[in-house]
Image 1: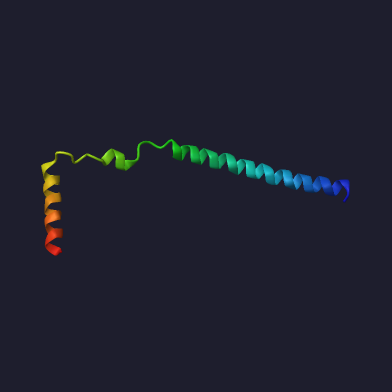
Image 2 (image 1 turned 120 degrees about the horizontal axis):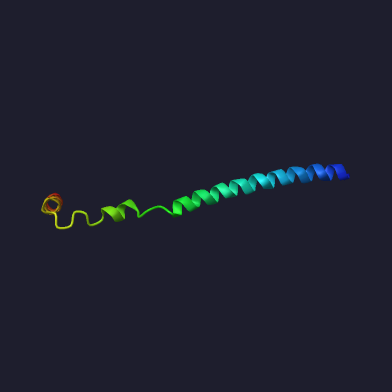
Length: 70
């Protein structure tokens, strides 16, 4: 293999590595953004109906209906 052929292969390989490094940076940024998310929505909603008589009645009616179907 000639020196010119080695240089050509080396340049191609360097270009591929540079592209991979660029994609890796993008993936790391995306992942970092996902990991920095606020509190999950379900944690914000959990307990929001505590001591709510209307919700308690809905639960009671649902239980009553399920028992009547069995």
